[in-house]
Length: 240
Ligand code: GLP
Image 1 (spheres, rainbow, N blue to C red):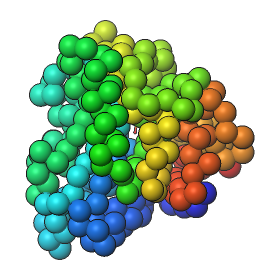
Image 2: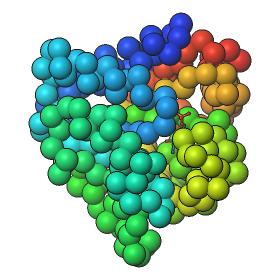
Image 3: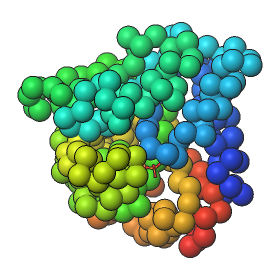
């Protein structure tokens, strides 16, 4: 595992953007596995700036997202589909037809999971971006998710509902269920890039770095990946 410790969130975002931009320039039809949450916002801002200033193009890029709340339509302001449009897709030249995310309002859970797994199979990811939940989750794979999981529906941990409530007007509005890419699928990406920022991630980061891979800490699976980079800011790295 390649670990980069940065001074602060700005430097973390800068380093992450350098890695993604290099991928896009070297392989203009790359498949990017993308993530939501507050952590990648600085990275997405830099991708947009670089697109505007240097003309890096996403015309042939495909983007496959990790997860989506169950029950939210793709134009709901708190849906991850909307988040991606607002923070990245509508601000670069990517073709929206080349962007993929689970359908939070699909009628049948099983067929939606199968549909998404076949997309993941069709478009192998060159790089998979990940954030980190304070309880060690990645995507919406909560503690004790099997390492061999593919796309599935999860019931969110209480701590995740609380963490994510800041983005909703009231905690009662946070969906309790979500679709998520599974841990096995995450590991199938050629490269993994995990970002963690802030003190509330420090415990999970320390467990990830010092412990053995265990389903109790879903993020720990990435230590088994042969090409994995973790970028931390000083606060997230403060318990190392
Ligand atoms: C959510 C997302 C994860 C994300 C995590 C951390 O639960 N499903 O993909 O990594 O939040 O979010 P943040 O970056 O806002 O701390």
